[in-house]
Length: 496
Image (cartoon, rainbow, N blue to C red; front, side, top):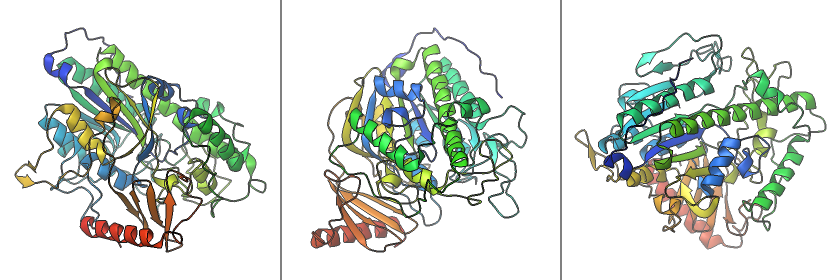
C-alpha cells in the first residue's frame, strides 16, 4: 500500500485559506441508520463518536436509498435525472464547482457514476482520483472476478485516468482509500490553499470481507439475533435522545426469517464481519482526522460523514452457509433479516423509500463554528451538500460551465444549521427507486410501496417509524401529495 509521509507543516495559513474552510466529505456504503455507536449501534466507532461529541448530529437527514442515485445527487446538488445517464454535461460536480472557487480537489474510493470521458471523476473536476469506478468489489483484490455475475466480472479500478490491475498481498480497500486521502490532505495543506477531499468507502457493502483481528472483536456479539438487536438499539437511541419514545417500533419485515430456526453461528459470523468492516472504516477515519491535526488545518476544516442508503437486504448467491463470511475467497452478504435490523427502529432498507431505506446518520464537525455535542431535528437531504459546499467556499453556484447552461441547483445550504441557526425547511422532498416512491411535505410523508401498489400516509412528528397509515383518514391530503409526486417525476424524468 502507498507510503504516507508523516510531515507536520508549520507554514502560516494565508488569508484565503483562513477565510474559507477546507472540506472533508466521508461516505459509507450500505450502512444502516443505527449501526454506529453514536446512533445506537454496538459497533465500536470511537472516531465517529468523537466527531459527534465535538460536533453536530442530524436526526432527520436523507439519502436516495440507492448507491448510484445518492452519489448523483451528492455530487451535483440535483435530484437524479435517470434518462440518458445520471451524470450529464449540463450538470457540474462538487469537484468542478469547488475548483471554480480555487479549491484543490480529490476523490478516494467508490465513484459508480461512469468511466467515459464525460463521466470519469478525473475528467469531472477531481485533481486526484484513486479507487473503484464500479459499485462493489473484492476488498482484498478489487479486480478478482466477481461470482455475483454470470461468468465473473472484472472491476474497473484506477488512479487518476490510469487503470490498476494488480494489488499487493496485504491490500485492503478501506486502508488504501484512506492512504490516498491522507496523501491528498498532506499535499493540499502544503500548497496553502483550501481543499475538498471526498472519501467514499465501500465498507460495509458486500462482499463481507474483513481482517481476522477485526472480526474477532465481534464474534459471538450478535447471538441475540436481529429481533433482540433492534430492541436493544431502540433502547439506546431513546436514552440518547435520537428517537422519540412515543414512536412504536416498526413491525416485522416480510423478508425477515426466524432467528430460532436459523443457523445462528453462521448468522452471528455474518454480522460480526459486517461490524468489523465498519470498525475498520472508523479506524481509518481516525487516520483522516489525525492528518488534519498533523497539517495544522483541523480547526478550519468541515468534516462531514453519512451513508449512501440504509442497511442492505440483498443476498447475492443466496443463503449459502457453506460460504464463509470474511476471507477473500468467499462472496457473502448479511441478508434481509440483518439488513432490516440495521436500520432500527425504522422499516424497510436499501432500495425502499420508507425511513429505513432513506435515513442516514449525518455528523458534522467544524471546530471553528459548530457547537459541540449537538443534535438537530432540522430536515436535510443530500441535494443540500452542493449548496452547502458552495456557501462555505463563498462562491455562487455556476449558471454556466464550459460554455453550457447548467441545471439550476435544487438543494439549499446547511451552513446555518452547522452554526446553530435555523434555516427554512424544505417545502418538499421526493424519492423514487425501482418503483418505490415517496414525497415529504413538512411533517407529512406519502409513500408508495412497489409491492403493495398504493399510497400510504404518515405523520413524521408523531410516527416516524411508519406504523400508523393515515391514508384513509386523510384521503384528500394523500391524493394531493400523490399528484405532487407525479409532477416532480414529470419534471425530473423519474419513472412513473
